[in-house]
Image 1 (cartoon, rainbow, N blue to C red):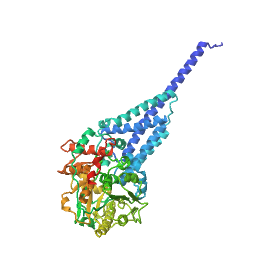
Image 2: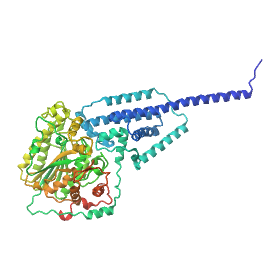
Image 3: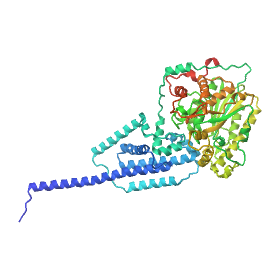
Image 4: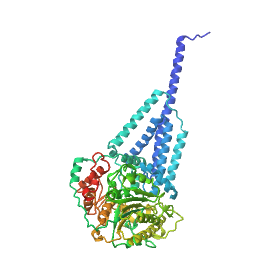
Length: 626
C-alpha cells in the first residue's frame, strides 16, 4: 500500500530538522563557551603564578591585593581582545608580554637590586651597554616560572575552541569588553580607587613588589608618570612665601679669589661600615679617611640604592628632592625637558665656565639632552675624553681625573671653572673573574663584596692622585666628592650587617643605612672647616648649597630657603625624612614639620612644572649680586 507524504508532513520534517540542528548548534556552542570560561580562568592563574615566581612574591596574601593582580591580568587580555577580536591571540599575547616583564624583572633585580619599572624602557640603551658585565643566573623560582609559562602555552595550544560566527554578537562582546577596559583605565589613573586595595608602600622596592605582586606593582608604578599639582597649591600663597625669604648678599674685598669648583659623583662610592661592622684584610679607604685639613666630611643620604645613578646627581645639581616626584621615576628622562635651574646655571650666571664629564655613553639616561638644559657649556663623554684606561669593562677613575686636570690646564687665564664629573669604574656587577681582588672581607664569604671593596681601594688611590695634583696648584680650587648610592652586593651581607644593630632589619631606621654614602668638600687653600663641624648627616639636595657656602659664592632665594629647612629637617629623600632630633618620618604623617615639607613641595613644583607662573627670581641669582 502506497504511503503518500502530505505537505503538512513535509513541513513537520523540515521543522524537526531545523530544531535538531539548532539544538546541536546550541549544544556545541555550550561546549565552546564552557571551554572559553575554563581557559579564561586557567591562563590568568598561570600568568599570576609565574609573575609571582619572577618577583619572589607571595602566592597567597591580602585578598584585595591578589584581586588587583587578577584584575590587571584580565585588563591586559581584554585590551588586546578589543584590538584583535581573537581570544586565542589575546591569551597568547598576554602570556608573552607578562612573561617578558617577569623574566626581565628577575634579571634586573639580580643586577641592580631594584625591580623593573615601566620607564626602564627609556634606559634600554644603558642596559645594553652594561649587559656584557652581567652573569645571568636562574634560581629555583625563576625556573619554576619558566616551566609554568611553558605549561600555559601547551594547554592553550591543545585547547580547541572556535570564534563567534555571528558578526553582530562578536561586535557586541568586543564593545562590552572595550567599555569595561576604558572604565577601568579611567578609574585607575584618574581617581583614587587604588587606595581601596591597600597596596604596600615600602622603602625597599623589592619588598614592595614581594608584598603587592608583580603585575599590580608595575601598574601602580605606571601611575607615577602622571604629575599632579600639590594639594592647596596656590600661586598667590607661593608668591607670599617667596617674599619672606631673606637673601643675604655675599660681599668680598677686591682681593678675594673665587675658587674653581670640581664636583665628582663617584659611581657606587660608599663606606659600607655605615651598615655594619665587618672584617677586611686591609683598609680600602685609607686616604679618604685620613683627610682632615681644609676638609669637610659627613654622611650623604640619597634616594636610591644599587642603581638609578642620575637621581642622585639630579638632587645634587638642582637641589630638588625625589620626595616630590613620583617614586622611582628618573627626572632626566621625564622632567628635564627644557631649561632647568641648577648649580651649573647659578655658577654660570656668576661668570663660571661649566663642563660636565661622564666617562661612558652620552645618551645614558638622556644626559646628552639634560646637561645643556641644566646649564653646562660643554659635555665630554666616552667618545670625546682623552686616553681613557679601563678596569674590567669601565673607564677607570685615574684616567677620568686626568681629563679633569686637562680641562684645568687648558682653560683661559683668569677663567673660573665648574666641572661636574660622573665616574664609572665601580659600576656593578661585581662578578668579573679576571679581576684580581686585593681586599678580602668577612673571610671571603661574599665574593661580590670583595670585588667591590677592591675597586673602592683603587678609587681611593686615584683620589689621592687628584688631590696631590691640586695641592700643588696656586689657583684656589674646591673638590667635592660623594657617592651616588651603595653597591648592590650580596643581600645576605646587608642582612647580616643590619642585624648587628636592629632587631627589625626592615624598619625605617635600619633600611636608611642602605641609603648613605660619604661626602667630602676639600680645598687647596685655608677654609674654616670648624664652621661646618656639626654637619654630619645631610641629604643630597642640600649639598650644592653647602658647597657654595664654603666657596663664598652668592646663592639664590631657593637655596636660602633650603638652608633654613636644613636646620629643621637635615635629611629629606624619596624614602622619607629625618628631623633635627633624629626621628624618622614618612610623608603621610601630619606633624610640626608638615608645613615646612609642604612649602618645599610647592616651591619645587613651581620650579619644575609651573611654567605659566614660574617665580624665576626664586631660582636665579639676585641682580644686585651679579
